[in-house]
Length: 126
Length: 171
Image (cartoon, rainbow over all chains, first blue to last red; front, side, top):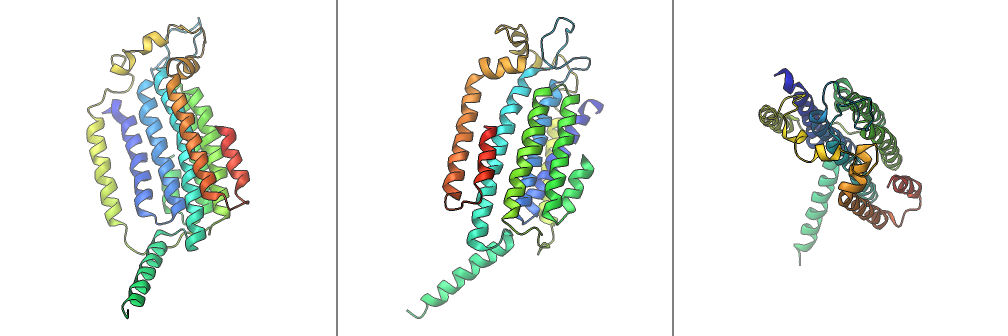
């Protein structure tokens, strides 16, 4: 169980991110939740690569034990892709704000339903 | 870090949420240094704590900074995320434990990477640019697509452009 403590931490962060993502109706806060979820995935990859007594994977004659470099490479890619996703999501949020005047999911849905209701009411007499 | 996340969960002011997420990213970078992932920590500190925060603040300046109080009780999301968490813990118990040198991830290609074939002492750089160069190509494709999407979404606005160019410097 001690050996799996790091996984418990990772899962806690993941669950917190997921909860923010589902429960908060504000689009910007949702995106922050998404990035927390992402950082928990970084931990999930990097923690198993660590070896106790090892150093960072930079070859040097003084050291013989290194941590695993492969997850580091994968996560470097993931960080950059994550920030690209975040930028795109924020651009969408800004456009939604322009179109609806709000970034609260509930208000956006309410407005959509109101528009559908008025359209239905306008079409009935015809 | 748990405190930062929990406060973030409960805060309604979006400005504090963004600052807290920056603090969280710096804490994450510290943990990554402790886990020997120095390259990742550097990227996380500059991209996660720097550029993400700038992007979020840029978007916030165009939006309202208070979150509305939720209209409904959060029991369903709480139940969903807790059950997902329970499943993940159950799955994680089957994974190799911490500091297990016999784990499959230390066995297959990694010993070859450590032989310093491409004569770059930093193995992370060697793997990123040489052994797994196609990954980096795919990553630049994703960043290019995101940049194209951003321009398509925000073309009519002139105000957002500094934020956008900041993101491209990172690419």
